[in-house]
Image 1 (tube, rainbow, N blue to C red):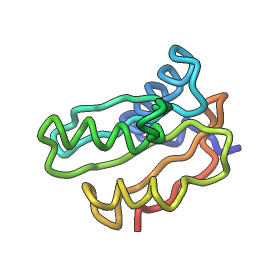
Image 2: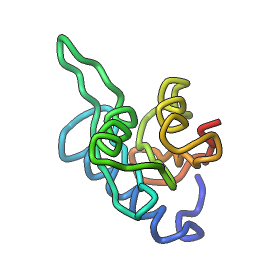
Image 3: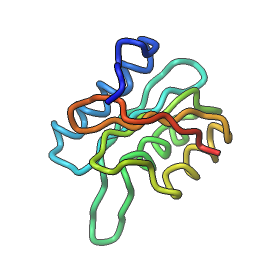
Image 4: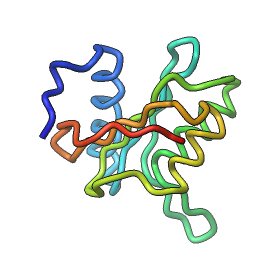
Length: 117
């Protein structure tokens, strides 16, 4: 477990938002991204018969659909130890390869920070 108190307050915020989305919607994952202007986009997993998106893919899509030009950071709250290759690709497409992806457990504790690269 990583000490979240060492995180930038804006990074703590997106982890908290991602955790809240997961809990509120009762979905396997919650995610949040922060765009180049500081706006945040929060989403949960989408599991429809005709559409399946991870929480991080959904948050990136929401940012892109809202006019975001880039991402500063992304966060996902999940049981998984790392974001999937598809999740990292979605973040990379909008934010670039150096965009940090914060991975937290369901308790909100930061497990890892990886790049979208």
